[in-house]
Length: 55
Image 1 (cartoon, rainbow, N blue to C red):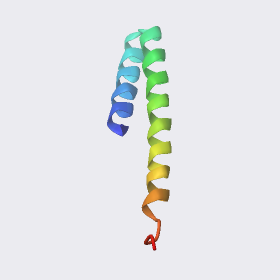
Image 2 (image 1 turned 90 degrees about the vertical axis):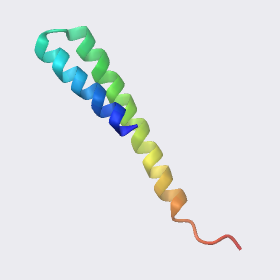
Image 3 (image 1 turned 180 degrees about the vertical axis):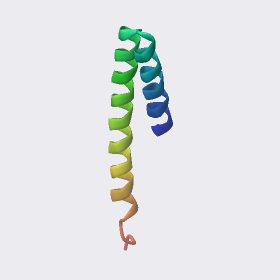
């Protein structure tokens, strides 16, 4: 998930340098959404992974 966010970030940066504003904005928006989803899943994984033994 994080690799997809970084891929879209790189696409946004390249499109921004080349002057494709709409493509850059869309790719940056997708990268931002994917990064937030990654953070939420990462935090959930940390919380669920630290549970003690079930008795």
